[in-house]
Image (cartoon, rainbow, N blue to C red; front, side):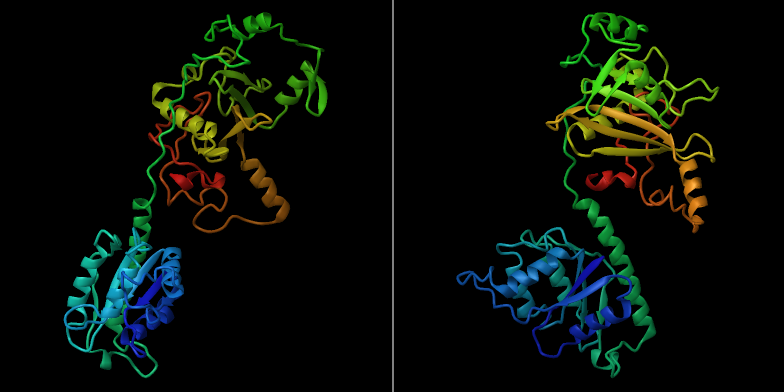
Length: 418
């Protein structure tokens, strides 16, 4: 976390600068802390626009790059001094780096009340429409009698004062994290998905009821689909239809294909080993619109997944489905498919239990999973909302009730915009 401290004084010696320097030394391990100065800024004059001058632009840039700002203000005649007021005028005239930026106010003064009245006025200024900063409420740190507050090394003497300052800074860091949600752009409303697959695309086999239990057989007859030992030319190979089936059935994962019309067309039927599939399919599902493959409670999540893939918000979405027992770590992966022009052509859902791969890797390398959080499976689970355990294509994991707007496993980088 980056925090910048602004010294609200242009004096060569400033106790407020001393206070910020102490914060940097004493609490620097908790966040990345740098000081910014206002000493070189010109006095604000609207008739002599200095917005693009180096001092103003440099200050604006360090504020833009920071996650939060701490302003240490002195008190002059019951308010902030002229140089700090001038700096804030530049930062709210044609540029607005403090807009939506969390700001903590502190201050040091020669007198007992610290800089209480200056802090009150500064809070009002930060709330002005042109500034529009997010002033950290409460937790006022008012350092009075500053001549006696520091030792010869520039460190605060009183342990209770240091402890209170540390508490305020910890709360400010939490405040910064909270404001990240306030500053997020509104979620883009994507076009709804036709899960009933009522439209047609160039590969739609027409004249066959999509919900027919023998859709594969009917569609094969209408389309004169090849089978058996007939060769199929692929982009880098030639296989018979039988060989393709052998090859796909041997994959150590369950594969499903739904086209861009949201019609469920294929799954690699697994050999009958007596074990249930991780995401159960049945021979009557191919051909069905996706809406037929899911209970009503799961359809919003299905739509969200397809929207993300179709509109390029994400290329891969991964979800851990924890309903298979402690000896498995089952991941549902949703991969967008594109043609040579980049057009969306559907999705490939592949489901696999990665636990055997993890166990094999640990055995081969001699490494172990350590710590309170499973280094492989649970890195982000404590900090994020619960992930929906819903099969985006077939409804295989329908037992888990999913939230309306699913969060996505951090492995895929998918939740940055949500």
